[in-house]
Length: 46
Image 1 (cartoon, rainbow, N blue to C red):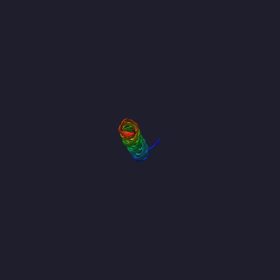
Image 2: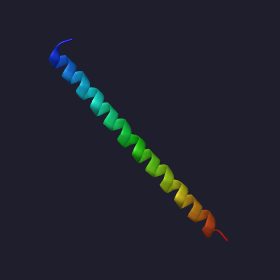
Image 3: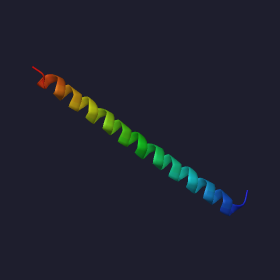
């Protein structure tokens, strides 16, 4: 493999990993927030 091709592949993998970590973090945040809101709504019911 050429040096340039290798750099591009490594860069793409790096971006892909960053994307997955950010997406997982956001998804986790949404799930936690949804659970928190649901808990409050249930607690607020008479």
